[in-house]
Length: 184
Image 1 (cartoon, rainbow, N blue to C red):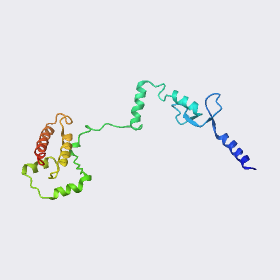
Image 2: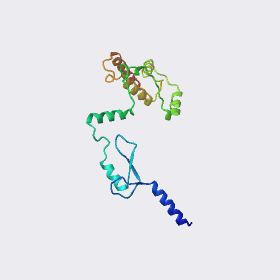
Image 3: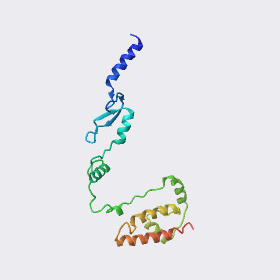
């Protein structure tokens, strides 16, 4: 047998395994698959390029569903079709007890260098540093970061009706005002 004859036999065998386009009266090879229906999403129809384009333009996954059913589908998809439950007694219940200090690692060596020189702070400034929960420093960026973090945590709009937090935010504001004058 010649090489051309072998290639013809291989081509004939591979054509038996190819699908014909699912469009009526189309004789082309169906190379592109599409789901047959919404209920049978993993059963496929095979189309040629021209007919797959037509099928994709016309196919609507939500066809036949009313608005509430579509809304339920979307809501289920946001949690990957897994159930979810509301948190007990509010989402923000224990956030005030979390105390995580993040340092600016990009400027860590510069911060250490600035903190090594001896700087005397007044008693009111040291109290302000304690209120802002930051070690004594002249770096205003560190002070601003600590201030912004605490303001977000204790802001009255975020903690509606809590008098303790209102007093705490006043102390934080006063401490920041005392410390922002260090570099001036």
